[in-house]
Amino acid sequence: MVTLLRVCGIVGYVGHRQALDVVLDGLRRLEYRGYDSAGVAVNAGDALAVERKAGRLANLEARLDEVGREGFAGTTGMGHTRWATHGPPVDRNSHPHSDMTGRVAVVHNGIIENFVALRGELEAVGVEFASDTDTETAAHLVSRAYSGLDDSGTKGDLPASVRAVCRRLEGAFTLVVTHADEPDQVVAARRSSPLVVGLGEGETFVASDVAAFIEHTRDAVELGQDQVVVITRDGYDVTDFHGEPAPVKPFQVTWDLSAAEKGGHEYFMLKEIEEQPEALANTLRGHFTEGRIVLDEQRMSDQDLRDVDKVFVVACGSAYHSGLVAKYAIEHWTRLPVEVELASEFRYRDPVLDRDTLVVAVSQSGETADTLEAVRHAREQKARVLAVCNTNGAQIPRESDAVLYTHAGPEIGVASTKAFLAQIAANYLVGLALAQARGTKYPDEVAREFHELEAMPQAVQQVLGTIDQVRDLGRRLSDSRAVLFLGRHVGFPVALEGALKLKELAYMHAEGFAAGELKHGPIALIEEGLPVVVIMPSPKGRAVLHSKLVSNISEIQARGARTIVIAEEGDETVRPFADELIEVPAVPTLLQPLVSTVPLQVLAAEIARSRGYDVDKPRNLAKSVTVE
Ligand code: M6R
Image (cartoon, rainbow, N blue to C red; front, side, top):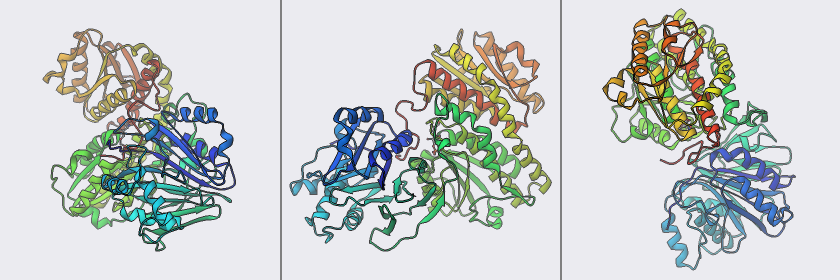
């Protein structure tokens, strides 16, 4: 038997429109969460109409056209888009999964960890399985509970049946369940996996992400841990897994449909690159009032911040790189030691944590399993955790002591762009809040740093003027076998980020190095024509950094490298060593990553596009990684 783990998009609907249309539109906006298969179930009168297909949503739509959509008439339904980490993404493993009668259908995000035992138990009473998935156990269990075939005592009561099943499940899951006998309701449940409710006029939605229903409503409700929700046309009802009424958190989505649409752009990533000035401005807005830095949901006192004697930043991928950037600023401003750790490594190496340790958990999605586990580990060790997150009410902020939201808006492209820049800005706000509370910066210095940050949207807007030049370069580099990236100081994490972007989008070998390390090994990689991107520091900042990098460029150029230099406008010293020069505006040294990253994002996207790859949905990846 194959174990399937997944990060998926889920949508459920009860209302006055044709559910198939609503669900397919929702899945289109959730496809960034996984694109290994897609499926729908609609309550079509006295039976469920179910269709599912391996591959992208387009395959499902083609299949629906083949079989005819008229069989899917009905106003209650649900759908799923899947990312599998184990097992073949074939039709039989695609969601929804059904019981043996076909009257129950279930979609699922997460892992039912005890599914082998549950499956054994079900097989022992004659249940036949049609897939390799853990999800199918939930469909059979709900069916048996609803039909009175088990001892749960929930016969004929779908919400009670789902609650009874949830009490038996181990692991993390979001489940959405529909039953042919219950055409007026959809039941959903969550544990450690995202689920939000959308409230429209005479229609209600459930989804993994508000993007699925933002076209219809901005009124949303965030569910808590271990809760079951029943949605009907008229609203929703939430209980815990034992049927007791449970508290929820209503909220208003602050962005609209256009933010989740391409808006005339060729792909989401390009749109999101262009949205970076706005993402930065929105992230900074409101965080400096009456001469002080203020965080969002500050559940830590100034005294708590004063007591901090060490900072860890834990994160993955681009978010980790944002932490590496922030280390330079936070140490400089606060004189506190800052360690930046890959969340996936953090809890396995017994880090030294106590109640005076501040752990900053950075995550766009707020769902990343590695980061969530790092947060849990830190809290178990009594450290205080501050989440930097782009998704309202996601699990990581829910489990943290405080939260600072990045207001980048929805990021649909799998490659992080505007969220990355917003994370840097938010991490800097954390650094300034610490410096302010600890008195390592005078109020006027904090104010000056903040105002410099506030000028960055304008500077990033200016960098966007290089897009055409960089796209042209990308087309010319598209046949390269590999690209190296070099930087020093804050330019080093930018080099890492540039290499990550190229790897994930263009499937090209790319490495980022601290330029000073080159001579300790990587210089052996340099050969005739190898493109090397160099992130130059400002000549007006730390002169020593600049001159050292100029030497590094001349060393690699002498060995045949094709040098692509990102430098401050007017930096004439570097021109003779640059085969290609991309100029960015002059900004203070610590803020340079906010401008120098942008051309690297465009470069990776254009190389990927020229090679014929899907820029928004690179192979093997998904936007949120909710498995360890
Ligand atoms: O949602 P998160 O910020 O926690 O995601 C972390 C990484 O998975 C993410 O940054 C990933 O590396 C991106 N695809 C990079 O572009």
